[in-house]
Image (cartoon, rainbow, N blue to C red; front, side, top):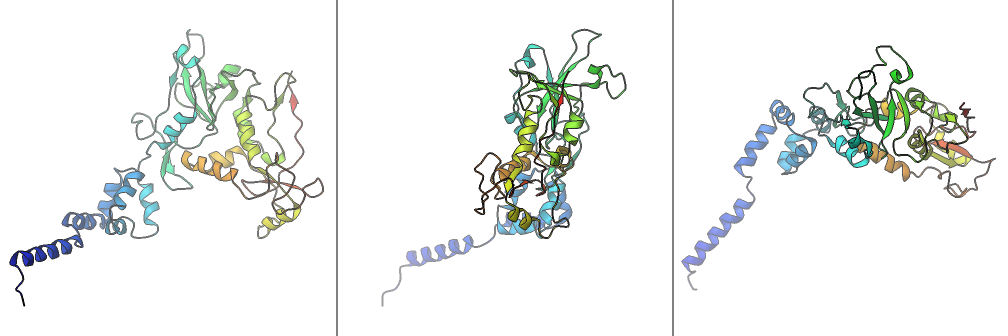
Length: 348
């Protein structure tokens, strides 16, 4: 029998050591895992991270992941301790389009995430859907009033504008002072005043609509029919002032046959629930980040409930939909929406 070459034996031993080393956990990772396993230290580290950083850290290895998320509720607990990452501001900038008048009249945009706004108090809460800490500027609002135009003369009032939800056009927004109110709440400063005041037409619209109270818009019972306010023969329907709201509220409606409506209502307290949704209940009373808002809107468009009002009058179950066998359902609450359109009030 031939004796093995000493060089070959040495190489074999080296390979064994290398292979053995591959399965060993690096000392640095062991130290990191021990640190992250101490919840107090993990909280301190997390307070300086954003959600994407935390998930990147947890994905480095199974051991680190187990140390960061040892229990099911660990993720939500840590997300609540983080600062807002400004995602909502980025989404708003992608969707909203300032008018040509912004630069012409020297307007100022007041849009700052709480993490960046060191000199302004901005409330932050966990998103009701994903649990990520979201500041008031990065959540969904019915009306964002974030553009300020200073007055040209001392006896003039400043002008305000902003955006509806994530719709593109810049909308005029009037304070109560523009209508002669001299009360303390009517006088707006150069800070943001979301969901307040009077909504005016888009600044670059081909047609104008009558100004509408934002309070009335967001508190209207949408279960009574379409969102219709001031009416005039020379204004298109829907009015440019409320068009963005009208589109959102109409997209939530689905036609279903009686059988399908009764089937989805089974198990609920009210066997025939009536929709009483409002824009305030859906978007303001729920602290929802803009990322989750967009996800909800997308899911609503792909909903398996019923058919869109503009689609073929055939229920998804195959039954023909007609006046005697149809219900109008709200996707927000799965309740029934009244089919008659409310009579609009004619403007003078």
